[in-house]
Structures are given as structure tokens and as C-alpha cells.
Length: 604
Image (cartoon, rainbow, N blue to C red; front, side, top):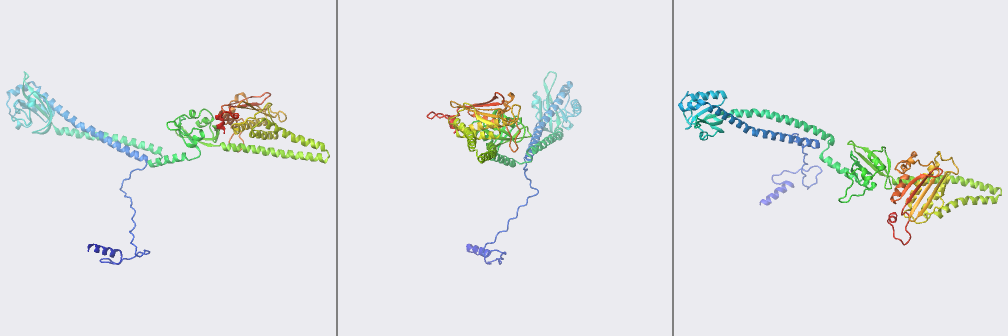
């Protein structure tokens, strides 16, 4: 019955009207038969009186410092006041004992005690009252060996036995204590009273009212509290000053903001495709991301190996232009530097603490494209010149044919074709690698357009298979370009044109070592600059419009030579100009059937 009644009640409430339930009114838009939805919960309003914990790091540091300052001040005050009460009690008992000792030292007191009777007005009473008033003690009591009082502040108590035990004093001992007697709680001092022979004939007890000791303690509390408040104020001011410093240093951030910034910084540094290198004020590396490790050739550190953090950048990278740019010795924007065959664009931004943050961008491919563009432009200029020259030759040939000079026309065509074919055939016979031969043929065409003669040196011969032809193309192409620019630039030893505008290329093989020489009749390199010309970014010519800078060609030549364990040098040429010599060991492949060489494998 109970279960059925409950079921009917639920039906009456949720469905059709039941017992004790009124009609259910449907809300507009409600689905018939669906259970009514509960009213939406109201948002909780923040209570104005509720205390909220500070979020900023500086505020949290300030709060912690204030709590520590208040706690230390309260603890120090308590530790000071706790022994103060004992010290005041000890001082009071010492004072009471001193009064008793002064009273007992009276020479007439022992004789008066032996002769007098324990009644009011006896000589002992008068002497004790005189001492009490002089010392400010609460009482001075003289008693005999039976403990009977001969003096007291209250004359009615004279002749009666003392209320506290005098046995220790009568036994010859001095006593200091806090005890309760007929006059209440007091600080007491008791000393034995001796006659002329040194025998104990009684005792003297002096007391100081304990309320006076308590008053001294109570009076010391405000002074101690004042000192504590002053110390607390100094601590609060120091905490506020430190909090302001923390606020400025942390830019008002919270701990969660700082943690988020660190996470974001790590994610950003290791995801961007630019190298980032941070240095401290002493030039030590304090941050390097993955891209910077790749561009600088540092590699990922293995377990237990140093990753370069904390090391000086000069010790990590070695001397050179890149180190000078990173340390700020060379200033500027978008500075070019070479590292391990890579052309890098470096920008350095100093920081407030004396350090710096440098960004590194790989411009190797862009430089290669730029050089290819220069070569393409030079080739187009050469083709354009050849077009004009070819047109002139066709006009000449047409004139000879119209004049009926057929034999002269045949000789003209033979001479024109033979000169170009002779140059290409000479290069092909002396240079076995097709890439290197094609480079020299193209450079010869460009040189001819510029009015410069490019030829192979007598005895040039390099027919072996090259381990890395592209490396030799880079080395020889940079040297030839540098020579063509030197010959084309006007100078004291460069005539305006004619036979003396010459670039001579020498190629020789000595075993597996390739020796390249490029001689020009340009202005030459002064002896003081023959080491500087191979430095990154060094150039005696102004940068061309739209190019990032000069001074990279010879630097790349030196890098490639060092990779092979070779050398590169420059000297003066006979009759003026310069001679560049590059020696590349292991540049030629081993003969068929011999063991492979690690340099060959690397070149492949």
C-alpha cells in the first residue's frame, strides 16, 4: 500500500492531476509529456567581503614576507619577554636578600635579640623598621631559633611564630624564594643571624612586594612592544621595497604567467626556422636553439656531453668573422659570415644586462642562386654581344658573296669558326671532368665579351675523375670571377684594353692532389692584405645593388680547401697582377681497383 501510494503521488505530480495536486500548466513551447526542466542555476556572485589570494608574483612575495616579518617579530618579542619575568624575580630576591644581609650585619642586633623580649617597641623592632623604611622593603622580620618574630610590619604579629618554614635559614643557609606569607605573595630573602662567636642565634627575613615586580614587567612590555613595532615597520618597508623591485623585474606577471611564458619560449625557440643564440655579459652562451646548432655545426649533445651552454662563444666557434659579429666587435645589420660552407646572415641585438641575442639565417642557397643569376646575366650579355658580332659577321659574309669574293668568304667563315672550336677543343683535351670543362668554356665566352683573354696555362692537364666536381667548380669559378673583376677594374697596372687583359688558369694533378692556379694581370693584392682577402666579408669593392654584400667568394674557396686539408694562397705575378694557388689533397678519385678513400666517400 505504501509503494502504491507513493506511485500514485508521483503520477499525480508529474502527469495528470492527482490527489492533492493541482492542474499542471505547460510552458510555452514545451513538449507535451516531457518532464519539466529545472530552473537554470543562478550564477554565484562574488562576495565583497571574501578575501582573495593575490595572483601577481610580487604580491605573493610581499604577502609571504609580511607573514614572515610578523611571525619573526612576535617570536622574538615572546622570547624576550619570557626570560624577563624570571630575571625580574631573580633581581627581586637578590634585593630582598641584600636587605636581610644588611640587617643581619648590624653589630648590636645579636645582643638586642638575646636581651629583648618579643613585644612591641623592643629595640629589634625599632632597628628593623628603620631599615625597612630606608630600603623600601615590604617587611623586615627578625626571629629567634624557635621561629618567634621580634619584628614585623604588623606589630600584632610580634611574638608569634612565622608562617613559613625558617629551618634552612636557622641551619646557616641563605634563602631566596617567591612565597606567600601573612602579607601575601612576595620576593623573599633569608639569612642567618650570628652572635660574636659565630653561632646562629636567629634569622633575618626581608620581603619585597611581588606586585612591584609585576609592575616592572608590565611597564617593560610597552617599551618592548615599541621596539618590536619599529622593527616590524622596518621589515614591512623593506618587504614593500623588495616587492616593488620584483614587480618591475617580473613586469607584474603571475607565477602561472611566467611558467606559460617559459613553455611558450621553449616551444617557439625550437620550432622557428631561424637560429637563435643568446649570450650573457661575459660572452658566454646561455641559450641556443635547434636551428642554431644545425647552422653552427654544433650538433645535438649526447648524454653526458656538454651542449655549449656556459662556454665562451670564442672557445665554442673559434676565431673568425662569425665570432666577431656575435661578440659585437663588428656592428651592423644583416651581416654575412661563413660557417662550415654555409653563408649566414647574422643580426645582433644587445640586452639590458650587457648580453645579446643573435639571430642566424641560412643564406647559402640564396647566395648560390645569386651567383647563378650573375652567371646567367653574364651569359645573356655574352649571347647578346655574340648576337651583334654574329650579325656583323653575317653582314660581312653577305657583302663578300655579293661582291663575288667567294674564296675570301670561305676563308672568313673558316677562321671565325675555327677560333671558337680551338678554344673549346683545347679545354676539352686538358680537362677530363665535363662540369669543370663546361665552366671554363662558359667563362672564356664571358671573358671574351669583356675584352679579356682567358686561356689555359701551358702544361695544364687534369684528366682524372674528381671526387667532388661541384666543390672544384665552386673553387675555380670563384677564383676566375675574382680574376675577371680584377682585370676589368681600372687600376695602375691595368691598361684600358688590349693584349694585357689576361686571365690564365692552370690545372695540374700530382697523384691524387689537384693544384689550381689562376693568374690575372689586374692591380694585384697588396702584401698587407694577402691574408685578409680570405676573411669573411672582406672586400675592396662596394656591394652591388640588391646583393647582400661582398667578400664571400674567396672565403668559400678557403673553406673548401680546409675541408680537403689543403691550402690556398695568393702572391704577386710577374709583370703585375696576382696569382691564386689552391692545393686540394685527395681531390682525385683513386684508380680503379684500389681501396676507397674516406674523402671520396664523403664527396660522393
